[in-house]
Image (cartoon, rainbow, N blue to C red; front, side):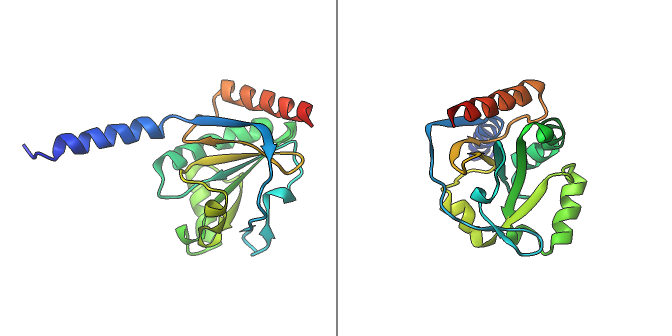
Length: 177
C-alpha cells in the first residue's frame, strides 16, 4: 500500500468537513467597507456601498470551488424567497474564471443560478481588498453601506431555517440603524 494514501485520505476528509460547514461572523458594530470596485458584464464599476438594500449579500465565489457550486445551486430558491423582502443577493467571481460574459451566463444558467445578478472581480482586487481568504464567502452589508458580517464556507441557502434566519437577521440589522 502506498504510504501516502492514508495522508491523502485524511486531507480529503478534512477538506470535506471544513467545506461543508459555514462560519457566521456577525460584527458587534458594523464596519466601514473600503471602496473597492467590481464590474458588471458591460464593464461598469460598482462598489458594495452602491446598493441600498435592507440587506445586501455579496457572495464571492469561484467556478473551481466545489462548495461554491453547491451554494450557487441553492441560491436560486433563496433569492426567490427573499428578493421582495429586502434582501438582495449578488455574485462576485474572478474575471479569469470565464473568457466572456456569455460563458459566465451560460455556466450560471447550467448550474441553476440564472436569476442571480453576477459581477466580476478583476485581478482579485475585490477579494484581496476585503481580506477574503476562503470561498464561498458572503459579505453582509446593511442599508448604510456598512459590513455587518460575513458567512464563510458553504451553507444550504435553500433550507427554510436558513431563509428564516437571514430574514430575522435583516430585521435585527434594521433595528440597529
